[in-house]
Image (cartoon, rainbow, N blue to C red; front, side, top):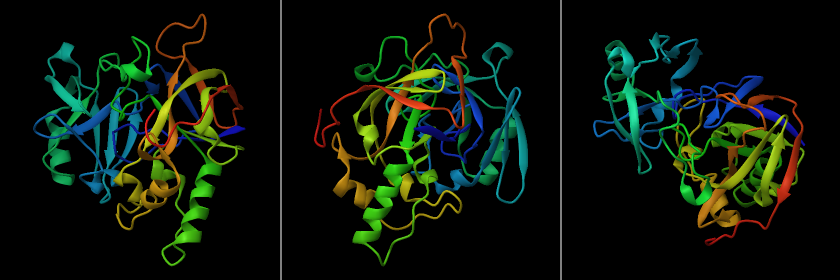
Length: 290
């Protein structure tokens, strides 16, 4: 098995970066979802509510972020910091409340012009948000991702999903790309749905715990290139053929493990072409509960 895809999402629900290498930190790939948009109540905003987010293209700067809109408008945004007086407030992601720092006024004006009345927020302290304790150890944290540091998908499972859609709904069938599922790492060379039984894996020089399956939402029905939402796939077919833990599921959530003797924020580096090895296997997750 081999690592064949790497994706980083600097701003939650915006367009992806697809580098050849990525450093891994305890809370996710370096630069991944340290920024997000929040509404007036502090709750995160995603493509679930506004598909236009996915059409904004981010890039990472040495100390900040650049955003480019479909019309070509671009802005560079320095990372805010409480130490220099940038305002901080509590934000929410799926019932988790934690502090984040508000980007500069110019960034907020740009966001308002291109997306709406949202606030661009930065997670200055990536240790501020704990992972769901039922599936993690004390001290393990996550960025502004939905719940876990990384998401793993496999090309074989995508191929099987596309086969099922084509067989049952040929008149509606269009092959779904992996980018619909917004994974962090993509693995090739497996059997379809093999990842459902994995409990611990090695990717290149690093090891990861497999925390739980990823239940999917309406974002997977959105074309990541155009922002157009339409049709019932892949949720209809996943709900029929691949339910795990009461949800239409695709992919597995990962938590990185700290290698012996490694200190600091960088645990190691993933590279396209890295070998992937299953270190611990287990029973597949049940369809209807634990």
